[in-house]
Each structure stands twice: as structure tokens, then as C-alpha cells.
Length: 494
Image (cartoon, rainbow, N blue to C red; front, side, top):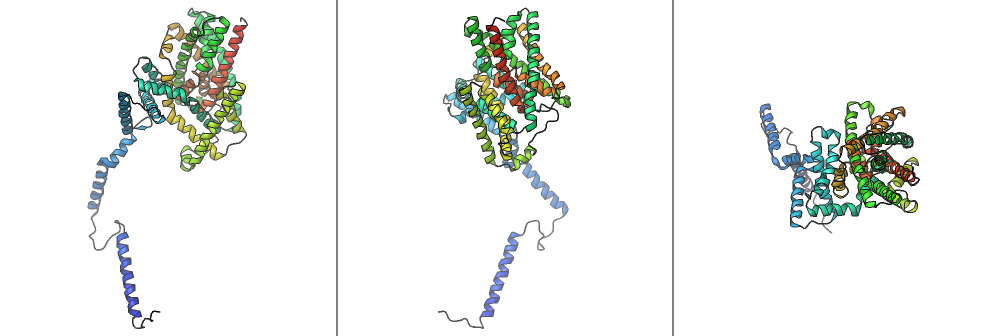
């Protein structure tokens, strides 16, 4: 046991401890004092000297390349790709192509599609006049098609793009994400009215387009029957996979002609009709900017509002990443349910998914946070995936020779008249139904598109990707009705 401290030493020790404590506090105060607090021991700088010092430091920071200059350089972008990253990607793609050791993994495919897709789109956006009528979507789709046909694209890039596009079928992942996101962000009451109403301008537009197309084709000496079966019907058949192919198979069985020859005849109008719809939709977008009262900017009905009240910036500020991931897997699940419906009932998977998404929305089966997540998924795909997808479509699914085969005066005038009538009828009928004319006409344009690929290109040119659910109705259901009615009438000798 330690002896007790002598009473005489205790006050001295306490004074020493207090002194050491004060000195330590003083040192901490000096070290933590900000530079802007006046120190009496230092001379106060004059205002002129202070301003000169601040200006010098700001000038040094603004002229310094690293990191401020580099950050500014990173803000220049080709599409979504920062400029330095763009040139690094260019060097890497060239290096892999020259060495012939192009990796076949998904990372390389994403890099190639993003690089070429946004490059083509950027070229289209810089074309005088044409940039206002969908040149970005046209360049992203048809320039790659021409480059492929004329063997300009290196074989490793061509092989990688084609294999990735056909093996993954990521077109339908894109459509699923766009449909689910746009439907879940709609007003519930407007949703059902819009789906019912859109059939009226679609049906009237199809009938008017058929009449005008046959009349124009006959005037150019193509004949009414040839114009109807090989130009008008293929345009409105719903694309290639769901339109031109089953149509040519049906023609072959009824007419007893080779299916390959018939397919070669019906495919060019599908391609040129889609190109016409893209250009006219881009022109309508420009018209809507000059006359805002004619467009709902992605909404069909007058007075329709977006149920998702928070602004996009606010959503980005607070939404949980798990909600975004949950919305993505929800979209994939709905698409897989659509595939199951196709296997069981023969209904096209996108159409089945479309109706399932509508039922989910009407039944309030998705919580508001998940709806916000779906909206972010929609925005991501529409912003980051559209042009890479169009490049893939141009390389793997758009035969340039079939497109150019339709470039005769008679075919061009007939096709343009058919598509313009289809869209113009939708424009006029929309006013009677209290719908926005421009947006309704753009949905009708999708009825003359190249299936799902055409929908993406048309809505991209029109800057109205949120119309994808209605575009799918026009393409899938409208196209199926046209093909079915045509084959039934042809089989009965009408």
C-alpha cells in the first residue's frame, strides 16, 4: 500500500497540472484557428493585397490542368461518353480489331455498341436541318447497316455485334424496361382511357392509309392487288419477325409460291416504311416545339398528368438503390410471364407483358417507391441504351440491300403516301377524341414501323419514348390484326 502524499506537496502539484493544461489548450487553439481569423501578432494585409492574392490563387486554379482542367475535359462528351474515355475506347477497339483478339465477353460488347452507337448519333445531331427530323436515330440505325453491307466494319466488330445481339436478344430487355417504367409512371385513370381510345385513330388511320396507298400505287401503274399485298399490308404488318415473315409464309401457302421470293418482295416496303415514319415523326417533334398546344410531350390525352409528382431531380436525390434494382427485376419478371403466355396461348410476349403491366398498375400492386425505381430504370434505358441498341439493330437486323431495293419512284411515293395518310388521319381524329394530335400521330406511325426496332427508332426521333406502351399496341396488336385479316381474305379469294 502506497504512503499518503504529504499535504504540503498537493497544492504545488495541482498548480503544475493546471499550468500544463492551459498550455496544451493554447497549443490546440493555435493549431485549429482558421486562416481567416485575425492574429494580432501578424500585420493586417491591405484590401488591395488581399484581392491580388485571391485573384492570383483563382487564376492559378483555373489555369492548372490537373485536376481542374482534366475535370473540365471530362465534361465534354460524345453522347454519354466523356471525351478522354471516348479516345481511350477508340484506341482499345482499334487495338483489339487489328490484333484479331477481340474478347467475346459482355464488357467488350457494351463498349463497342456504346462507342459506335453514340458516335453515329452524334453525327446525326450535327447534320444541318436533318438533325431536327430524327437524323440521330436514322444515322444510328442505317449508317451501320450500310457500313456492314459495304464491308467497312472490321470483321471482329461485326461478329461481336451480331453474335451479342442475336444471342442475348437484349432488344426485349430494353422494351420491357421502357414499357414497365412508362406504364407505372402513368395516371391510373388516364391509362385505361388511353388504351381504349388509341384503337379509334389506329383503325381509321389504317383504313385511310390502305385506300390512299392503293390509289397512289395504281396511279403509278403498280396495280391495286400488287400495291395492297406487297406494299400497303407489309408496311402495317408489324415489322419483320411478327409481320413480314408470317405474311410471306401465309402468301406462300395460299399462292403456292416460294416463301423466300415472297419475303424478298415484302421486306423492302417494311424497311422504307419504317424510315419514312422515323423522318415524319422527327418532323412532328419539330412542329410540336413551334406549336406546343398540339402536343402533350409524351401524353396522349388532354389534361393527362403524370402520377409521379416528384421531379426527376428530387427522385434522384432520395431514391434508394434497392428500389431501382427491385424495379428492374420486376420488369424482367413481367417479361418472363409474357414469354410463358406466348408458350401457353400463342400471345406475343411483349403484348402479354404489356397487359400484365397494366393490370399491375390498375390493381395498385406496386408501391410508390417501386414506381419511382421503375421510372429511374426507364430513364436509364432511354438515355444510355437507345443508341447502342439502334447500332446493334442496324448491324444485325437491317439489310441494306433490301432497303435500297425499294428505292424506285413508284414505291417511294406509294410508301410515303401510305405512311403520311396513316399519321395524318391519327392527327385529325385525335382532335375529335380530345387527344393530343402530334402524340397520337406518332403512335400511328409506329403501326408502319419495323416492329419493336422501328418503335425504338421512331420514338427516339420524336423524343417520346414514354409512348412505348401505346406504340406496342399499334405494332403488335395492330400488325397481328392486319396480317390475320389479309390472309383470311386472301384464302377466301377476296
